[in-house]
Picture 1 (cartoon, rainbow, N blue to C red):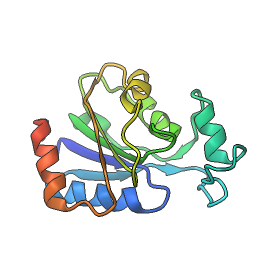
Picture 2 (cartoon, rainbow, N blue to C red):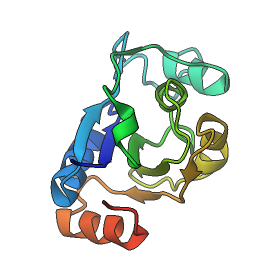
Picture 3 (cartoon, one colour):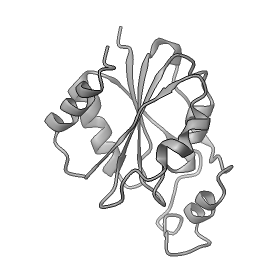
Length: 161
C-alpha cells in the first residue's frame, strides 16, 4: 500500500505538471486540490488589489472552499503539498486543504512553483494549519524541472515509504 501522497493546487497548470512528475517519479498517489469556484484570469490579477486572489491573500483567515477531499487520508504518512507561490507564500486554499484533516503524526513537505519568487514565509504561514504534523522545509521549482531532479529532492528528504 502506498503511504505517500502528492496533493497540489494549480492555477495555471504549471504546478499540476510538476506535481504529476513528482508523483510519477516517486510512485506516490496524486490528488488535485480543486477550488469550489474556479479562478479566472481576472481573479489571478495580482496587480489589481481588488482581485479575488489579492483579497484572499490579504486576509490570512481566508479559506477558499474546495471540492471533495482525500479518501482515507489516514493511510498516508507523508504528504507533499504543491502550489504556486502567491505573494511569497502558499495560497490560502492550501490551508483550507490541510485544516480539513487530522494530520497528527504525518510529515508534510511543501513544494512550490514560481518563476522567480522563493518560498518566503511559506512554512511559518502553513505551520498553524499542520497541527500534529512534522512540517519540513520545502523547495521552489521552476516550470521546467526534470523528473530526475524531483526524485533526487524527494529521496533526499528521507520520508518516502
